[in-house]
Length: 174
Image (cartoon, rainbow, N blue to C red; front, side, top):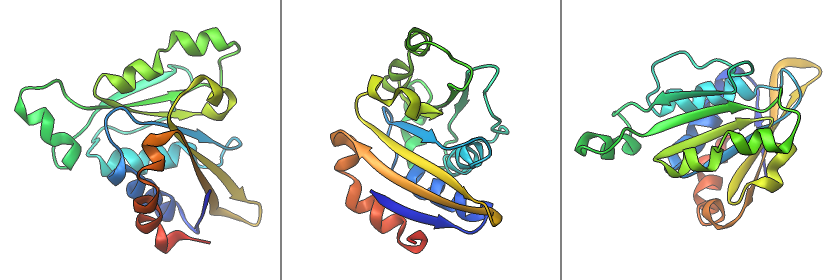
């Protein structure tokens, strides 16, 4: 596990950008934490780094928002060569009550179809997913802008990038 500290929303965005720089199509990243812990702020920083120009909002009532990735990042290179565009899919499982409802969203299939998937409240059903990175955000009760983020990998995809992840996040270590 990697423990990181963010003293501001800007730091949360910086950590998200460091992870986005290492993300690859097919990645599944689960975001966990209480209401207001910064999951959507994390998603905003992640998407901004990847060139998403639309506002990223919480998909609580829509369940999944999809954003085309900009071509100004390395992930966008393939989309300039006639392939389907790379996508960021941002899901929120907060309102789902049953495991079958999660399965119906086909999140792993979204990742496999040239996408990266961020899943808010994904820790509730993390056993349903294969390889993924879990980002747990916890707010500081004494400072509304401060967060602690704990990162852990499940499976080989993120484990293979773990040393790169540690190096990219070094400035945010607690």
